[in-house]
Length: 253
Image 1 (cartoon, rainbow, N blue to C red):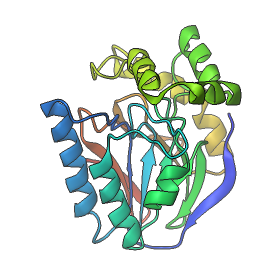
Image 2 (cartoon, one colour):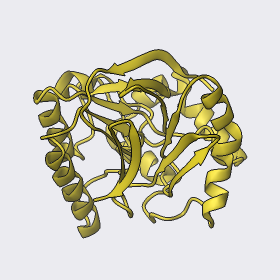
Image 3 (cartoon, rainbow, N blue to C red):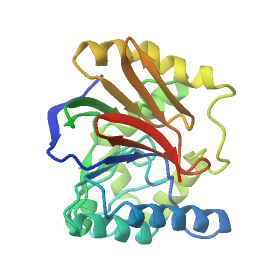
Image 4 (cartoon, rainbow, N blue to C red):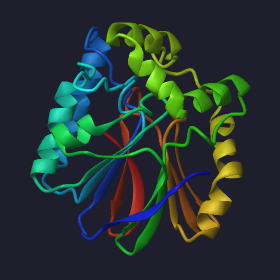
């Protein structure tokens, strides 16, 4: 498991907020517009008290930057994130399996820090491990192959040669998120691989809270007196995590 070993230190006692799996695409349906509007309302509501915001992967259903050309979807959400940045609130966005190719545009245009690897966060006298989790859940060989291709620099360079419209078509064909709930049949089938693959190592290395997205299911429980938090998603659940006064909770907007 490749991890960003340069810890992010958030020196504030204000609450930190975590959400994942918004899977934003074009506002062509009522459900998509409502989802984006709810996210914008949430981001503006926490502006007065947030000490930091972490987007734990798959903010977009697809994202790729062709130099000066970027996808047009998600502008309203990005403006809301930029408003947080302008207010002095750090916003960190992890690449997920759908938007692994996040690039410089989010940082240069909106001030959002982009991280492609899981990271360590130190805040409120706690050490958190934060990861999207797609490399940990599911034994599917096809998915492992797709993930290996996505994480390859040669694949990224080859994709850049395509016209943006062609790239968007391929991304839509590859995405299976439009049907919303399609990952696993049971909660246990979703969460167990995260337990087995990551949690013992993460807690052994000093984390007291492990935060994951990806599986579109909420789970918050103790594992050997440490906290495992699975955030759910913004598509169906409108769920998010909150670290306040050293205690991690999952809430619903």
